Length: 141
Image 1 (cartoon, rainbow, N blue to C red):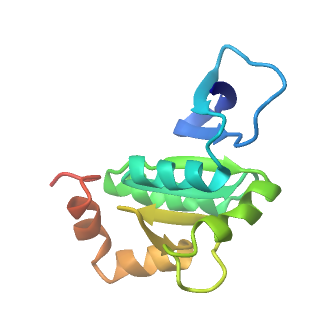
Image 2: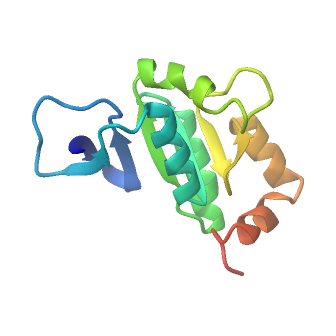
């Protein structure tokens, strides 16, 4: 059974995907399988996008992550979640992130959780970010 879920577009290519079914559908809805769990939706999104950032709706650090990646030439998918959705991330991503508490925002590159802003910047400063982006097909050089 398919049901419409809310999809809001914001400036700068930021998309807010509400993982809970709305009471009414709108013209900007995204069709997602109603029976798909939040965990399955999150895993599917990670597998469908070479670079994806999960963050709280009001998080300024996701903007910093996005700015770093776009400066390099990558346009990441940004999924903004409400607090209750963010709290379900660690359960959904235990296998992908072994560093304890999942940071918010969290960036995934090639289905692998890189971590938060500190990890992304460290990867960039060490010279490993661009080769990783090339390896997953998010950047062509």
